[in-house]
Length: 156
Length: 156
DNA sequence: TGACAAAATTAGATGAGACTAATTAGTTTA
DNA sequence: TAAACTAATTAGTCTCATCTAATTTTGTCA
Image 1 (cartoon, rainbow over the protein chains, first blue to last red):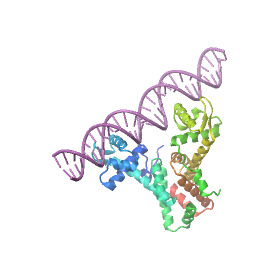
Image 2: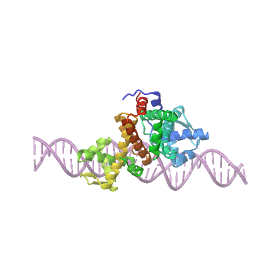
Image 3: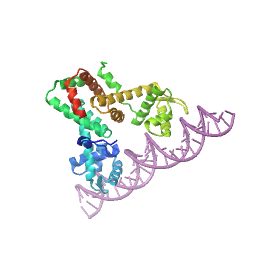
Image 4: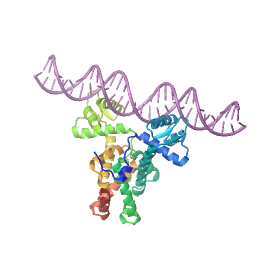
């Protein structure tokens, strides 16, 4: 089952983390670029769960060396954690844009679908979606007629 | 083949079942069209789990009135169960075909991705994918040039 | 600086969903 | 038809991810 993985596919390579742990990592990444200080409360808020669940998860992530974290202290991704977070976030972005740009699904729903898919989709599939998206953007920017017909068909 | 969008989206409407229960229902449906008699052993084999897990699930599905089932007896979907199974299976088929036909992902992997996505994707998204697939097939059968360019871009 | 509110943690419980080991029910077959 | 095999179920355990309630720590401000 050895796949020769292109750069694109490597970017979307699956990790061994559970969807849950991936969500935590991704959330920490997003919050840390937005807020500078990452709070348990904010992670809980963003994931719609309670703080004790976050504490439990943080301890696991620490054991996996994906975050630096001390009781009542700062929460920060390690290098490895940051690497994984970015992979996941790339998948997320790729999927969201695909659903918006190509499938003409509104941004809220696109986000929603991407959130649930990003942990399930394979590296290969995500790589192809990436290429499709690039292709489509090129065609659309060159005003290719079929993109207009597709749009009409999708938007109903 | 021309369906109103509402029909299409209804077809892919999300159920309240967990992914797991959806998998059981879908598996029972597939086995019952293939084998006539559905066995605990076969469900377990298809889902790659052990028989006791299946027994537990069957009892839950029975409580939800999705299957008729007696200890050591036959396993059959109820009308409601069959209805749900078909919805899920339609999502499955739609996704599989999309990944194969449009994304040019090989059938094994397409199946794999669809399996994991079918429980997560929304009715709207699946409806759009359905329409996209129809559109693409039409274009390809009419020998539209862009479909060939896309193919080259995806298959590389 | 000391009291209080907000944030975080611990302790303990719950619910899915899976497992192994042991048991029971059905089915062949000699 | 009794022995032996196969299929299915029960009983009990495990992990993951969540929760509430209670407690501890931190930070703020009068």
